[in-house]
Every structure is written in C-alpha cells, then in structure tokens.
Image (cartoon, rainbow, N blue to C red; front, side, top):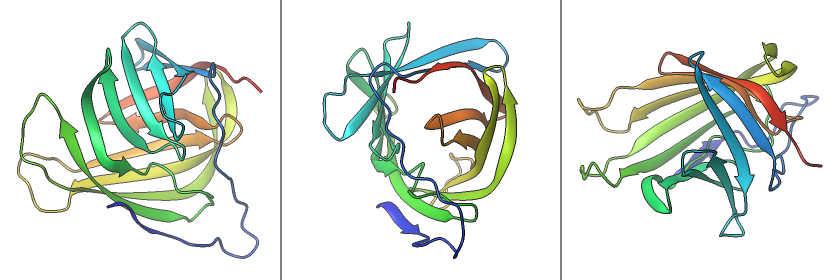
Length: 190
C-alpha cells in the first residue's frame, strides 16, 4: 500500500514541477472557515526522512514524508492518528493532467475500531490564478477523492480540492468537508 499507481511521465512539452524543499522555520498561516487561525511552522524533525509541521499554540504536530505525504498527527508527543503507510498527497513531478492513487489504513488511537483500507485518488487538472489574503498565486488545482476500498456504512466518501503553489512549496487554499481554508501569511527561508 501507499502509492499504488501513478502516471509515469508527462506528455511531451508539458510543464512540470518538482518536489519542494521545506526548511526549518518556514511558516504558513491560514484561516479556516473564516475565523479559525492556524499557523504551521516547519520544525526540527526527529527522523531524517520526515518533515514536522507544528501547529502553533496547540501542541499538535503533523508528520509528513519528504514527498509531503501525510504520515501521522501527534498531540504533545503522543500519536493521535496515522496513515499506514502514508497518504500520498503528492507524486513528483507534477503536471496538469497527472493522476495518482494511494491506499492506506487510517489509525486513530482513541477509536479502537477494526482496521480498513482507504483508497485515495488524486488528479492535478489545472493551473489557476488564486487570490488569497497572502497574495495572488498561480496554483495547481489538485482534486482528492477518498473512499474505503470495501463498502462501509460508517465511512462517507470525501471529495476535496487543494491549490498548491510550487513557488511556496505548499497549499494556499483548500476546500474540505464544506470548509474553506486559505493562506493569509507565509514565511519561506531561502
């Protein structure tokens, strides 16, 4: 599991974008639902192949792999959720028209539910000009479709859309579960 299928090579002449390098101290501040302010700061990772995003003021850490795939979330050094092995949010290089598919087992320490496999399908379908409080950006629009591999009554399929800006190396906006999250400020260390 993890990445199970991806387009191998771009069409001839297609513009491509490679994997970004986030650095300790880079910060992204968002507002979710018009009122919840969230500042993510790239922290010192405990593992060489991981990126740690600290949610300031909340003792919450999001652990990503070097390809920006979601590995786990932890509160005050205690895991609260994980994706085994990973939710591959990206597959580099990106280009308009690229698709990729991943599978993972979600784990929630508090739920204690029986494990199941979630299948996620991603599609980068356009470059769009996106205006946010942090500025106007040329962004890659990436769709995410998630559903359990086997039919489950307790899991609703989830569709999301993200706008990723290569020059920033992260998302500037996303729509997930009916709520919009938008970048309002950022700091990239070069």
